[in-house]
Image (cartoon, rainbow, N blue to C red; front, side, top):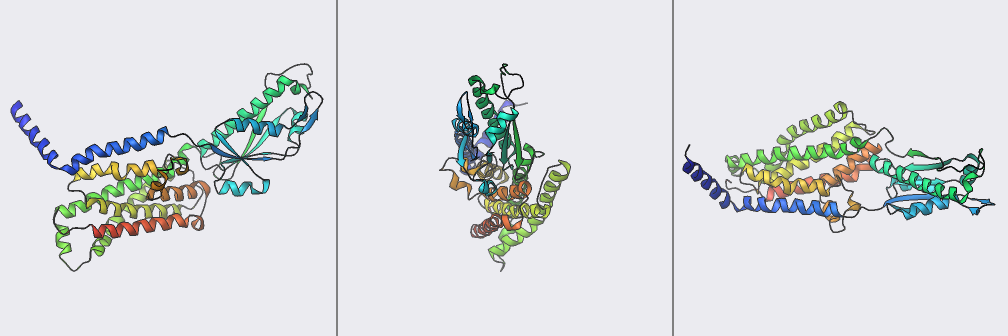
Length: 389
């Protein structure tokens, strides 16, 4: 083996890469962009969970501690917990506020809440949950239970805990608290995988379809096929639409495999129509095909296509509501989320799978996907060049 020949070949490869300024720029800038976005999102403060409170508790009068409104005491304990942002509600607006997402849970204290606790020595907390995010639901249940236990532990220290006790004179270290949780959407059987599955499917569909379209279209350019097509009477928009339909067939096959394997093999729970789920992912696949066609216009080889993944795909994951809700992102990043097609697909898929919504509820997200696809078709036609790349 000749070290000289090895070094000569290595120098040749390095010179070849350094001549390609676009590749060098992508190698340097793409990781910096992704690391910066990740650092901003991971270091941002978590937004408080909006929790509604319906406090109808009339309280009671005790000879030991005087007037007692147990519902208000638990509310004060919840307010002291920075994880919640409390919203006062009336009973008749609970479902509406849960449905529109303005609150993630509602705790209801009925008129006889304090009286029943005195009689039964049991605090039963009526908690209504939006339910589409199982992790958040479990957090709310745990924190509400904790607040109830702290409040009741404070009452024990005052001696109130002995009232009505069958064993008068004994002081209990803790008092029983139970949470009666009900769900507007999803339910107890839904787990974290059910919550992640919609965005997981969306990401895989966009990622693989983008690669398929970008590499295929780039190959047509480098082999001279695009040059010959543009020399014919065919309009550029027609060329883009033709490739979109041709590649779209294989994209739909891939989308069908991803969706049905996720639902049937992985046993993912879903509430809405399977056909509507396929429609959402199919529209996202159309967006992915056109996004790949557009990106291929700025790539000269397959290596540059791979370098486009951090610039095109990763921001979709970080800013598209996959792991962080857009409302919880820093204000200056939120406008970028609304130009990400994955954001609208994520919203629609979660609404169908976790809430059971239909076409009438998710059509704005579908319309946005159609609009983004139309814009990408026009941009792909405008950036198409006659010269061979």
